[in-house]
Image 1: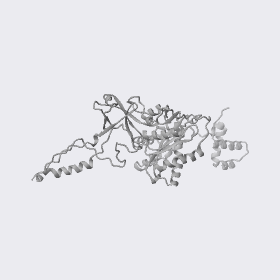
Image 2: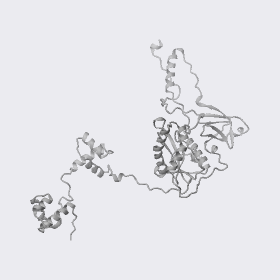
Image 3: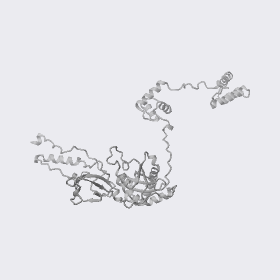
Image 4: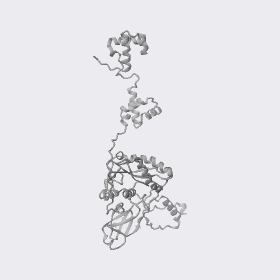
Length: 457
């Protein structure tokens, strides 16, 4: 027996015609039910008696539509789309084809053509990849997710700043919040020091691949670690970098929640500065954790207390080595440091010492456990030798001096210096962030303008 695949309308038509052949229904009534004329019903009955059910299947099935666009027309449209609208969506490309080329085509027709040419994907193909949730860690303090969220936390009441968020992976508990101007090594050092003093040392920190946590350059000097990473290694805290934002989804979702709830809470309190926010955050953390924190699978707390030899001030430091010259001097960040000649510093000629910058803005030169006294000579403060100008060239010299003062760029120090916006007062002046970048000029004093004949006379 031959099985014929029929549509719902064809099945209905087949049942009606069978009733006619069995004389259960008149031809006039069948024509009314099917919405056909008597002549059309008669033709269908002839096909049914001759070929059976197969005779009722539409003979257009599997054949191209008579109303379809020609291959030449479709090729012309796809040529235009490839040349001008390859990265456009079907809706926008349809509008531009009608506006610029006077070609009218249905949006869905163009969508199918673009999908066939590989210029567009259907909704299912564009759906984002699903990420399977990762199980929480068992114990509190085993893994702390860390991230910085730059946002308009004070809305229009204050500047844009960054919130450093420390969240426990096992309990989703906010462990530390600190508002800073930007993500930097010093700001993370300061926030981590406060975290350790409050909770103890966690087993590991889980962060993104920010340059504070990971040295992303292939030409890393020394051990290849960052200053923050070296401090965590000294404290025996592991740093693990996530490969994608989805991997540290708990802190990312916490950032989204804080950008909604914390912004509104600070608005109600009238908070508009970083200092006011940092004073408000401990009370907000307690309220947030009471609402969102979850109990851990294991009741143990893996935070470790500080060891007796852990000096947080000595550990949380930006440390770089420098060689001492025979004149007991060393160079750091375009500044000449001259060591005071003492019994400790005199034998250091030709040896290496550590230049230590602390988050509070202080700077020390250390050798072992000794802090070395020094004097500072800033090479940027050096003044150029005054030029000798004749009286008749004085006006031109003054005009040139004014132009040089307007276009003189801010003298920049080393490119690899730390960001010091989170520090307090320090010796390295930082230009205002809203200052306009002046035009760059060549080194050396520009030549004076040549006088015209009229000016010479």
